[in-house]
Length: 233
Image (tube, rainbow, N blue to C red; front, side, top):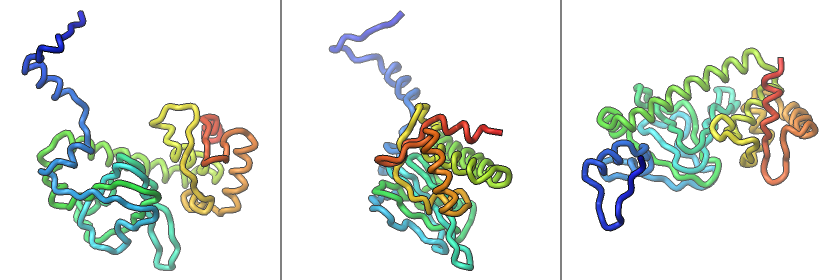
């Protein structure tokens, strides 16, 4: 049976404590506490947070915006390692003793990012179970995504890889919507992510558009029907 409290009455202290214990963990509020030695960065578009080869001294958490991780080979070829959105960590390799950054991290648009130094991050992971659980879930999801990306590169055609990339950018696995508008992204960037040429990306994008899988007007609208390309045998 549902119960109500008069506006003039305060609920018992035990009820208040129980409500607090069951409240979902809020990483933004937690990281803003004075006890957490962190710094919130307000980044503009295309701002480098760290560069490949820099000392690895901190972990970053995206509150708002998107971040691109890239790597440059000794021959000068650049490749995109990941594109991350709000709720993602990056730079966590410093916790495993990595002395220098293996990638370059660049904000893709105006972003708010929390920087947590290595010592503070280690302490918080040890002392705060809720935050530790959030971070562990991130690591597991990242590891799963890396495995899926490797399988995608080994066994799927460029067309299927492009379709999967567009669906991931549209965040279909989390949004649960029939169609999603993604931020504008260049075909050159898509080609780097998929591992093919820009001309092939252009060819497949035109095909997807004709079939009604995507719409290229204000931004990019990805329809759930694009999943047919990924699932095709």
